[in-house]
Length: 266
Image 1 (cartoon, one colour):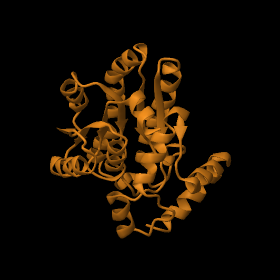
Image 2: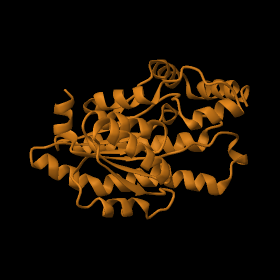
Image 3: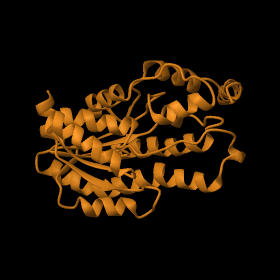
Image 4: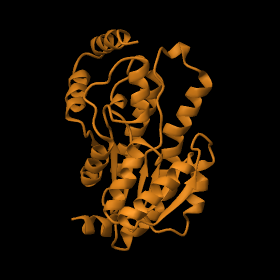
């Protein structure tokens, strides 16, 4: 099964935000499946440590790309530096969140989050789709995975700007799923719930313990296993059920209940 997966989406995968969390987990899972990697993030020291670890464990060849996706020209730079690489799978994973009351959130930080969470995946998709479609036309395959969030399904109080950015990611994935149907390019908007990561640990330390967390490696594995079953995939059963219930409620009632519950943890 791993060989068939690599034949369709390989030989090389690009992972953004690969220095920690779900991105690092994607890199590990793909290395185990025999992929070469292009690893992109700001913290190149972490990428080099990860690349060495994956090479020792799996013989993985990894290209390191220093990439700060809060800079608007960073996606174009990634496209340029990988122009000669046969990338069959693009994992647009880089992103971050901001918690707290909207009016107290730093405006410049919100703008940076918008660039990383929305501008970057849109521009990477725009640049890579012609390359992925060309693979499909040649009898190979291609894939696009966007890391969204269950918080993109509804405007989440005290996570307002973040949930808005992830709503765009989900919409981007769904639209491209429809446009690319039949092209040989699979599109998946991955929507995790609480996942083990540095960001989750910081939130728990500042506010309250996070319940029903899922290991990042499990999230990555399930996403890859379900890439052909898009457009949207929620890997955490608890959060899938929770957000299905919330979105089925009258919206005003759901938002008031969410705000009250979250306010109690702040």
